[in-house]
Structure formats: structure tokens, C-alpha cells
Amino acid sequence: MVEAERLGLPVKFLKAVPSDFVKFEFDDLQAFAAEYHLGEHRMVLNRTLSFNAAGGTLRPLNRLTNTEMETLYHELFHAYMDFLATDGGADALTFARRQQQCRYGAVLINPVVQRSAETEERFLNEVESWEALNEAWAVFVGWAVWSQLETGGRASLSLRKSGKSRATWLHRLEDADREGKLRGYYEPESPEERAVARKRFLAPASRISPEEVHYLLKEALGFPDDLVKQADQVLSSGRLPRHSHSC
Image 1 (cartoon, rainbow, N blue to C red):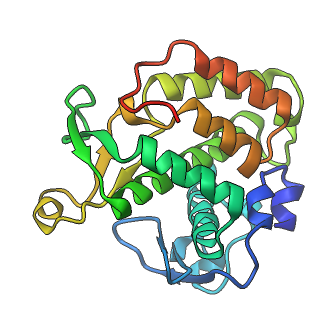
Image 2: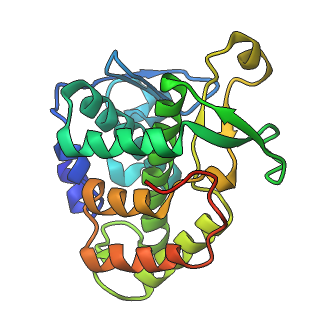
């Protein structure tokens, strides 16, 4: 966490999770770069992310690629959500559960990921909708950190003040939202559907909402208030119709 702060990376949500809450492991993962096991409070990272690929400790953050940092923050956010669900994190959990009910209970999915225009409606159960929200939020958090690194470089506090890097980050946000990249996914509980697709990706119309982005930027990532307001403005114009009603 100290290293992340020194690099100008978001640490607000990380500070909320006790250091002994998550058990870190390394393994030779084939399908994914990392895994988080809810309930077990266990994070498994690909061995390539470890120091000298030895599977002992995480490489120094300044030696991780931007994409690897995106993966790490994605999984760390899962740990944060796991902690909230375990500890009952009051306001944060209340907001998340409200979004789960009104935005992720009924969603549109892309049956074929490569065909974003083809959609089908799904009514998700409690487990599926919570996973869809978790993944949507973790995707956004990982993307926000990756984009910060892409625009500002390492050891940069550039997003803390107005300037070229911030303007570029906001432009990236606008593009990612318009292109429907900021969306979640879930693993179907039905064995029959899981046999067809291990994961179901939400369609762009069921992507993360401006209200959720506002919450994550402010309450989880701790971005400056003026940047959060600028992000609100970017997302308030040009949005495609959302499938779910606002909460």
C-alpha cells in the first residue's frame, strides 16, 4: 500500500481491508491471470506476477506492466467487496445491494461476445446478480488504474490536478463508456447453460451506470471531487439507453 501511494495510485478502498483478511497465493494459472475465491478470502495470482516468477511474493509494483496492474487492482477490489459482504460495511454495502437489485436482477447479455448488437434478456438470481455487479465494478476499477498509468505514467499524481493527462483520462472514459467496454459478467448457475458458456458477458446496454461510476471514483478510489464531477459530465451526455431503471 505504501508503494501504491508513492506511485500516486488509488489506495482508499485498500485501506478499508485488514491486512490479514486475504490469503495470497501464486499458481500456474492457465485460463485466467488471477482468481479470487469469495468466502474463502483467497486470491490466486499467476506465478508470472511473483518476484522472479518463484511464487513467493508479488513483484514490486513499479515492475508490473500496466495490464498487470489492472489485473491486480481488479482482484484487490474483489477482496474489498468480499470484506464488505463479510463485515457488513454499512453504507457501502447498502449502496451495492441496492444496485444489485435494481440494475443486475434483469440484464441483457451478448450470447456471442464478439457480436455486441445481438442481445438476450436474462433474469439473474441472487448469486449471479451479485457476481455481475462485482465483476462490473472490478472491471471499472481495474480500467481506471490502467488508464491512469497509460495517460500519466509511473510515479505520477497527474489526475490530482487539471491538465493534459486528466483530459486524456476523461476522453478515454468517454470512449470506453460509449463503446460499452465497462461491463460485467457472471458464471451461470444452471449446469445446462454453463455447459454452453462458462461466462456470460453483459451487453453494452447493461454496462455500469454513471451513478455507479460516481460512487466508485469518489468512495472507493478516492479521486478528487472536481475530477468526479468532470466524469459525471462526460457520462451524462451521449449514453445509450440503459436496460435497467436508475436506482
